[in-house]
Image (cartoon, rainbow, N blue to C red; front, side, top):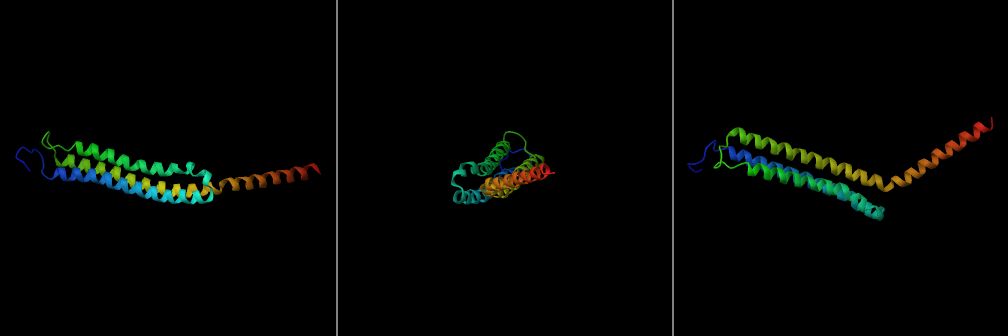
Length: 152
């Protein structure tokens, strides 16, 4: 690096690695969540086309995770300016750990959104019929119990 650099010369590597980790892992989670939820939306479109717009919510939630990773990556990368101020290994490790925290949280959230979104959308497609059946079962049971108690 240049002679005006103050701090540790390897510290920016760890800082930029943290920015990359935040962006890459968050986008991987967003991609997985979008793909897995999209499968559920596609199956919903076949079974119940009128409910497709209600099923888009998990896809949008998964897409937002990539934006969170981008925001953190920009914040980290703007904080890495060794010529303006001293940038030591502590700063690099702090940026690496914050990038990993954001990225791995985004990855795990994307996986959770994808799995739950797919299952939730599939459940929503047949839920109304099951509710009608369960209500009919409860009503018939109540009618039967009221009939047997009135005959005594």
